[in-house]
Image (cartoon, rainbow, N blue to C red; front, side, top):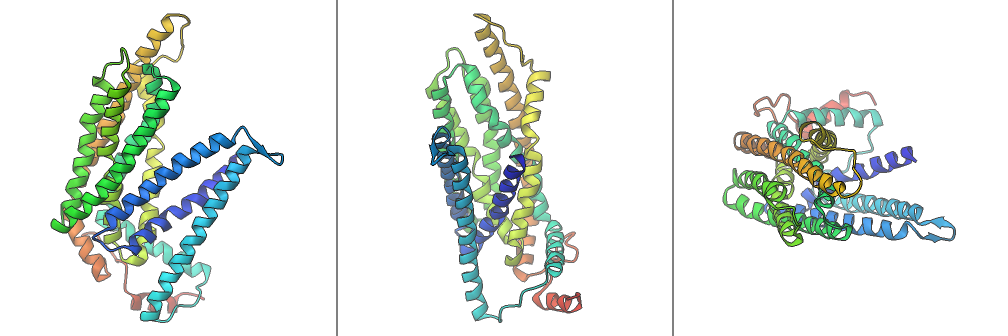
Length: 378
């Protein structure tokens, strides 16, 4: 079962960079923010719908097949359909482009494809703006992973299961709207301030998460818990802190590399961010237990309620530490893009990387790649 789940995760993860690159190729630079915003909205809707469908199907069966197995089957069918759709539309775009430029190349040997991918990844890693975005992603993705404890914290505060589910659904709606709003504002600012608009917006978003998280986790009273106040704070946090992927990261990554390298740049970015984000939940747990006094042992009777409130306060402080510190660092790291982004964008538009500071060998031109193919073993 574990192996099957792992393979399923690998298959789904392979589609994400291709989807991002396909979206970036399908729209021009003036509307990429909105496109990425709608992509995030679709992802959130799919997450909520898929989770609800899985929960509803789990206790049922069809022709003797358990419902949870059918849910996995539907997931596989949906993933395969998305993969085929990407292949179909991408092939159509590539054929249209080839008909107006040069004839399509013949299929390359696997060894040559791997060598070209390694060379392309090496060139992407040398782009200074990519390094900055990865650095902010290492800090910026940490708080979002830590927020997996939010539902647990709400229940410790005193909300029922139904109230907690409603509050978490409200938070997801807010992050979806925030992604769409951020993408729209990012496009507008990028048209007016070409070199700095998207970066300023990202710093506003990441910086706003610090006081908004403080209001939610530290300032709101927990005795008695108020769904309206907590819901408003969650909505504000989700709406303001979710701009960066659609307003800044996605569009900038598409502009700092040549079009043929977009899949690689999104794949490398997702990989680097996911690695550190996976450490966030254990860090929150350690902070809550070792630093803020979270107690695993639960007393019985009336003392249990008091213990839960103390644990809620401990978990809230741990969550705020895991949100505020990385978000401040994320906001500061974005500042480096003011220096690197304009140069990298112009270098990518020329199709080279040699003029970048630390750019190294760059991406190379089509003629250079053809010369390399002639030298590689067939």
